[in-house]
Length: 200
Image 1 (cartoon, rainbow, N blue to C red):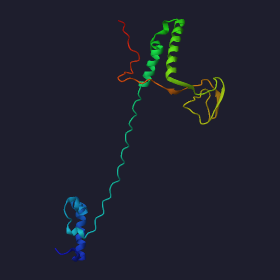
Image 2 (image 1 turned 120 degrees about the horizontal axis):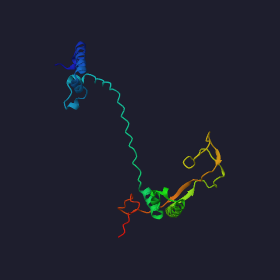
Image 3 (image 1 turned 45 degrees about the horizontal axis):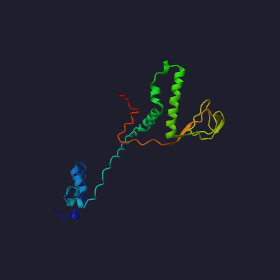
Image 4 (image 1 turned 30 degrees about the vertical axis):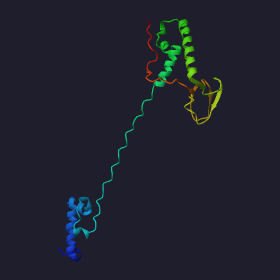
């Protein structure tokens, strides 16, 4: 076959026509012309003189599905159980709550409540430092700035419009300023609030 550069215009036109339809309907031939190195073979001589065919217009990429939100892990209950165990140890708090007091006289309930109150108060004060949210005396008039600290203050009564709000302090609220819980020993089961006692 003669050198492609010596082909006449009509021959080149016919050759382009043939190659065009062969590329259009023959995917392997099109791939060979487009990327001959991918097949491990040199491109045909005829393809050298031809301009590289334009790549087919690709369909728009599909949007990747958004990742599924992983729910946060459940918070540990060990600290809450540890505090409950302290209230039980010092004030028999769980025993008091589990007791059916409906049949007891008010005087008996009052006497038991004093014991529970003293023990639970001791446990709380040993491990939690409490401070009031508001320092004013209950019953005084207070003005709350805007924006309101909704995490620390709850409005009650006829609440309407925007601040500042003026009202009567009904409860000062409490905030845990410091917490010092004892360190649990290895192998301790926090779910056991009080051990069963067996007298021999």
